[in-house]
Amino acid sequence: MTPEQLVAVARHGAGVRLSQESLEAVDASRAVIERLADAERPAYGVSTGFGALATTHIPREQRARLQRSLVRSHAAGSGPEVEREVTRGLMLLRLSTLATGRTGVRRETALLLAGLLEHGITPVVREHGSLGCSGDLAPLSHVALALIGEGEVRDAGGRLMPAAQALAEAGLAPVELAEKEGLALINGTDGMLGMLLLALHDLRLLLRTADVAAAMSVEGLLGTDRVFAAELQAIRPHPGQAASAANLRAVLADSGVVASHRGEDCTRVQDAYSLRCAPQVHGAARDTLDHAATVAARELASAVDNPVVVELDGELRVESNGNFHGAPVAYVLDFLAIAAADVASMSERRSDRFLDTARNHGLPPFLAEDPGVDSGLMIAQYTQASIVSELKRLAAPASVDSIPSSAMQEDHVSMGWGAARKLRRAVDGLARVVATELLTAARALELRAAAGQPSPASVAVIDALRAGGVGGPGEDRWLSPEIEAAVVLVRSGAVLEAAEGVLGPLA
Image (tube, rainbow, N blue to C red; front, side, top):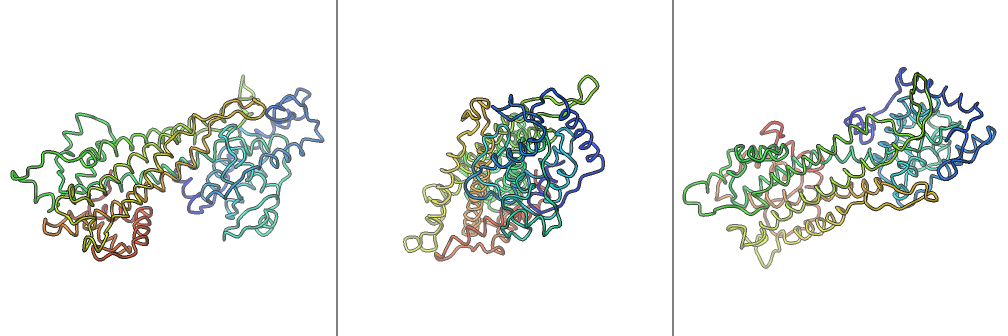
């Protein structure tokens, strides 16, 4: 499965199906579980209890109850519902693992999970409950609960209803879980991985948009484009830095504003770091993103469960393992939150420079129409500052905060779900900060009309902002709707599309 397919199913409601090859792999691994179920020797998860109760033998007549009890007891989440796209993402990733033939579930169980995705039935998953080891137990248990016809779900239209009702309306029948199936449905890193893949998708868009915003700020603050020259980037060959600098050069190309102060009479030696070092910071964030994408790709290619069906010594066997531990994913989730916070911090600093007459090179205080009577964009910067402060708190790593559980059987956990949840908030915050920088830079460039025409790319972005409900200079007005309109334009990709409509694809 590709990251793009994950986004299509999770966010855009695409359906799924299991191939014949997948169904045959599922059948083969199930046959192994059936043999173990008949054997006298106990097998973990098949004929024993779980976690600290792994040494307790379970007789055959109690094993369906064992699996049902596992799901019911582990569906212990609390708090508000997580987003539909998060739940659909973890459902798809669990199905992907089931389809590898490593878990021992029956084909009817895998097909039912695919049916939920196909019919848009989304189990209610709660915010709190996962420690990221053994995987995302509580969130996945809420999904598994729906497969046995229990718990709450939302249908394709968003109606909240009992799972049994939603299954019946869709023509689906609940399953009675057999040996190993409950464990196979809940033992994976699917929640944290799904949120990582969605964040990577969003951050790739946001980092290119941040380059556009930075270029417009350099332009509006009468900065120089010479520091972004390819020759200067090449002597410090970080790939992300080179890509970001190339984007800045492209957006600033043919700018009348930049050209107006490029001559020998320009007395400014060098720009502030928030302008001059934008490629270095944005580039480092890009390289962090690439590292996280590498980890995500490895995890996508994994079959995470415990125990798993593997071929050893020429035969299929069931073996215990620790692949459910979320550390690899948790680390990069935390790393991305750091990058998001730093890019947002630099964006806010550029915006602030526009508002201060000591640093904005001739623009009115706070870009106000009538300074004193009007406050201009003063409080828009406050909003940015409040978000940046929160992003710094969200950058504190979750993955170092292990709390033992299960009577010390699970004595070290990843907290990857928590890292993913705070990254989602960080991505949202970054979008809002960058959107406010764009709003600010656009107003400044329009107030700077005497200096010359902005670059063609900047003009296209300003036009997109104005068409999207973000007003230009003028008397004070209710600002919140315009900020929200700018956020929508950033998140939807409309700002980036406007720039790329002039320049072609940015790096």
